[in-house]
Image 1 (tube, rainbow, N blue to C red):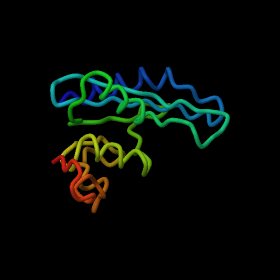
Image 2: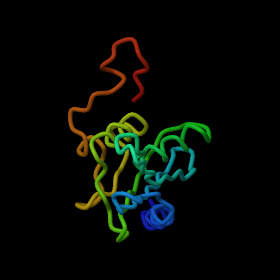
Image 3: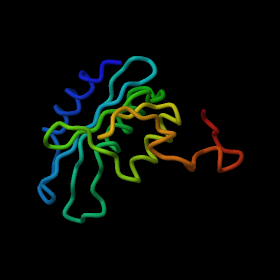
Amino acid sequence: MDWEALRLRAVELMERAYAPYSHFPVGVAGLVDDGRVVAGCNVENAAYGVGLCAECGMVSELHATGGGRLTAVYCVGRDGAPLMACGRCRQLLWENGGPGCLVMTPEGVLPMSEVLPQAFGPANLGGGDARP
């Protein structure tokens, strides 16, 4: 796993973030199971609640470019250091990477099963898409 390459892509996207209100730019990059790298940055809005986290942009790019499963994710803040995803984004990562997706955290690399223990997912919906 080339964590440094993911970090550099996340930093690149962080520099493109639109964060005029919080002044807290965030970038994220993820490795897809087919080898692609997808990325995103946060995009704020004057109506604060409708801003988009960086992970939202990354997941949108994932699906817009062919789908697949995330296998590794690196999110950074302004200083380029690992940044833990918020609760909403942890759910996005679970849905699109599953329990084995590796996440660089401030404490090091952790699988999603540790980042979001006892996660709610498609299998809980009964009859829905129960992706692994």
